[in-house]
Image (tube, rainbow, N blue to C red; front, side, top):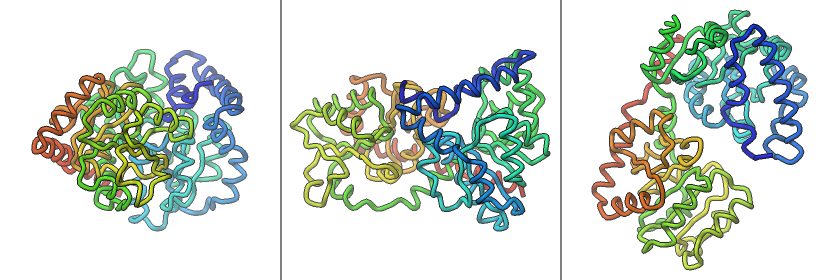
Length: 433
């Protein structure tokens, strides 16, 4: 079974809510059960599916053991790591401001939970149980949250319905809505009714507010994207990486982050054929051994290549390509780049552009970026550029390296965009207050 079977944003299960039939809830619940069976089968040979199953095993017993339901609990739910980064500024500011609350953080996907299961600003961290009527009731009986935050586009039918029934304040953080979503279709009445359980929507743009107003939901504030606050904070507190400093020295460096196979093929073709004006740091999305070996085989022998796990102060300064085979470094790596390439643009969509933009570097990425408002904005402002393939990538890189003053100006445009859009976290907390 394909390793992408479990999607970080839970799209597969949420698609079931498209059906506005008399037996919609029965169909949805049946779909949930089938999905669980498929994950269980996939867990035999898929690591991510194994984590998904193992993380939910005995979850209610663990919840009862760890959570004191008499405490005031603020529950934050994220699909995966990307949504966590959006929720994180609110979690940390909320914890600092409302010290009597315990923070419960839940994830849908192993991609979020396994990386952030020791996050120091949450008191309790768990997987979200499967979305069934029984599970929703059991979960809320144990946790008894005083306030709930879902991030971006997490719409779990039974959990939201039960939260609404209990009249617990439920907020959506950094929400973004598009006209093609089920809520705004003729067949989407049941899904539209689900949204009425939210006390307030904090959305990223005016279009989202307009769409919600069109279905008579006016409890909406345009606060922007909380990731701007997060990435600005990252830049202000970025880690010094001595080995990366030695690798860079006085060279120009392209940092390629969260890359997939199509990204790596055009990038490494360019570096194989170029006159080596640039050094390359490549941080692939998947760092398992087989993928690192595959990437290494794409690089010609004349380019000295080094894995970060093998690097030391002696060998790193002579390397031309550095492959990052560990997690947690990317946001600080961009600080050492003169150009940033954001992966994912030849697949479902690009990864986080703001992590790089905040450091003031010109951005490049593939053609599938239009669902990401910040990427569209950066292109319109001139802080980023989309490339359609190898030749376009070559032209853009050579233009930037031949015109360094212009590259610096483009990078400053990207950094100014981040700086000018900060403040969503403060707006959210002021509203709640």
